[in-house]
Length: 107
Image (cartoon, rainbow, N blue to C red):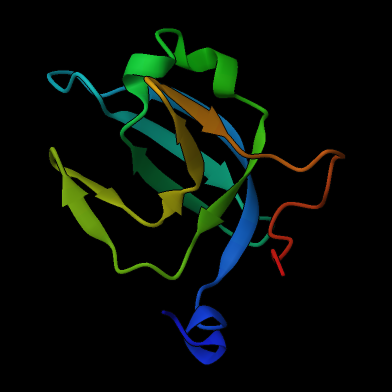
């Protein structure tokens, strides 16, 4: 069990994808650049197999865990984690049902 106090430590913000590309030599990784209103961040996400044309992700809004410790993946720094749902052999991306300002906090 996770305490509510621990849950409150997670900073989940809505970002808008401004670029998306496959990482050469990595079957599962996409390099996504997000706009969070006051900053941009690079997120490396293991969703390439579900999005053979990464350009379909551009301009989509989705929640990102932004206070996760950065990690190097295939030579690229990932500065957060995209939240998605694994359904069978698919990844389903979460998104607001209406457009919200980039950087909006998920509460």
